[in-house]
Amino acid sequence: MTTTTSPDAARPAGATTSTGPAAPAPWSALVNAALLGTERRLPPVAVRPGQGAAAALLDAAAVSTVRRRAALRPAPAGERPAPAPADPRPVLPPAARRRLALLLADRGGSGGGSRRGTAPDLTELLPQWLAAANGHGYRAPEALLPALLDAARARTDLRPAALALAGPRALWLARLNDAWKFVLRGSGGPAEPSAAADPGRVRRLWEEGLFAERVALLTALRRRDPREGLELLVTTWATERAEDRLLFLDSLRDTLAATDEPFLEQALSDRSRNVRATAAELLSTLPGSALAARMARRAHAHVSADRSADPAVIVVEAPHECDAGMQRDGVAPKPPSGRGERSWWLGQLVEAAPLEGWCERFAGRTPAAIVALPVADDWRTELHDAWCRAAVRQRNAEWARALLGAPAAPAQDAEVAPAGSSRDLTKLLTVLPADERARWVAEFIAAHGLSDAFRMLGVCAVPWAEPLGRSVVDALDIARDAGSYPWSFSGVMGLAERCLDPAAADRLDMLTAVTDEPEGASPGSGGYWSEAFQRLVGTLRLRATMRDELAPPSGDPDGRSAR
Image (cartoon, rainbow, N blue to C red; front, top):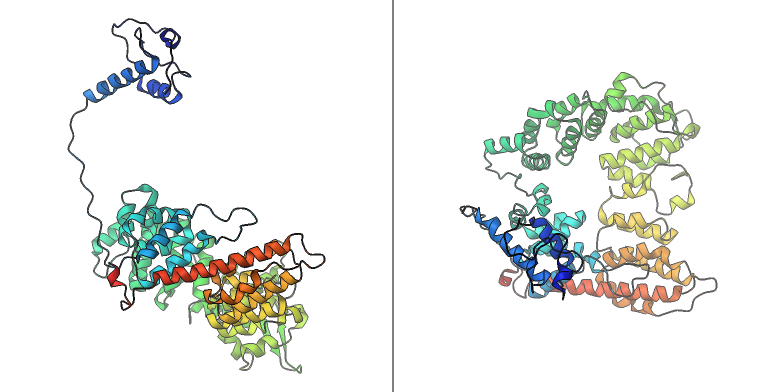
């Protein structure tokens, strides 16, 4: 607030110098004058002779404060919140505690611009640090809980690991601060019942709780006993909104059981098309369900082997109509733009049919032998794409393996993944065991480079297995030597910083030198590649340091001495 030297200049229009009583100025007007300063806004108060406008404003504010408080009656103090629950887990070692503070402080902003320099991006290391800390069973320091919850509020990908580290005190804080209400929706929240939960409390929460709390409650009950959770859902199913029914159905996915089949069969007649489609999808993944058997009969009626040919040929006769029974079982009658009706219906039937039935259908052939059979009349792409979707939906590794083929096949055989195919190799890879997945991607990169492998790398376990890590680094080195445009590999380089085994840092040192740029290379690419490899090596060493900081003290494998 600034003052003026002349009382007359400071006097607002209509203000008087008398000391007699005057109508008090509104509190909001006093606040506005204080915020803007008396040189910019003349305060709506009387200024006595010899008194500056700022002093008059302060006097008026003091009087107004007393006047506003004079009518208040004393009230009893509010109830104190219950003490925070105990967390018996060990605290972080001192070095790891300092590291967490640095990671949380940096979460707002390194890594801007196209050239990041050689400094590691701490923001991208926080998820990995949280996973490692949870692996050791530590709890978050009390002083860092607010910053940890703020980070989890800003980044949904951090929430599961951040809430696991924060433990029960995160729930306690969330009840006191609306900014952290998202914690109440997470697993382990107040909606998650214990084994001895009061049935009355569970029922009351189900009928009166927020939707997110109800989903958490249903998920928790299903983990404990799928039948118990389903019984609770049935009590209010008919009165739920369509969008809520859809989300409730989706929450059954991870705990699907044979006892769910009657309920899902009823949901096939639901008023909502999306609910019907989701119920059909869930039934198609349920082994031995009646819907899976119906879809198998339909699909087998349209796909068969012509044994008169040598070798055998798969013959496809797509359906000519989408009848009411097919629609009730989840077949969408209207195809998307650019798709024919018959091929659209066929794909949905094959996708929902159990894959095991095809081996019997084709005279006991293995999935690999079936996939290798020629398909008549250009139906190969449509049929194989549907089998790929079925392998992902049913999590069938043998079929996924057969449909992926050898890693070099996509480039050498256009029929394996032809142009226009909807096949998603990355989704197929998620069905394979982690070590096999890494080997497949490593061989793919060795054969075809990195341009088509970025999404594949994202589904490989971290840290990358040695063959995969070596294949990625070799491909980056080849791209540098070829003078490739440097920025196009920034995404892969960022993945390598987070996913390579830290033990590889020392052998990558040789790649940090600035090399001569080949003819035709992008200007400055040599410096960029050197910078990027320096950052990669520095990040790997930092990750190794972070791992060592989290290690329990020697002779204390559980970290209990860190209490």
